[in-house]
Length: 156
Image (cartoon, one colour):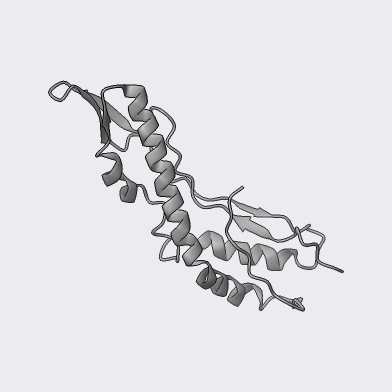
């Protein structure tokens, strides 16, 4: 059986989106500014795994095990477990202020997006090591590939 180039899988990085009203904000009467006072409902949401290899393929179990390693890399002592942690973005968010609540919410959104982009760059720098860890498990599962290409994290 041949392997289609679109097969494989992916694990998305954890979600930390900050829609308006997510963070705890309040109006500071002394400074006459809206300020961030806490994390509110902002949280790190577990990543999701997608397997594009058909279940009927001889490579399905191999793909699943490979992607499960990537999933585990975001928790415990995994190579990505320190990424996308809310406590790491909060110092930056607590500095944000504005006289207009909606503008503050826009600043929050953009600050989180910038931080996520920075986190993604760190993830990319660690990608080779993460692939070594995943292949150490999946390469042991039959059948063996004729050649092996590393998968890369990407955004859709």
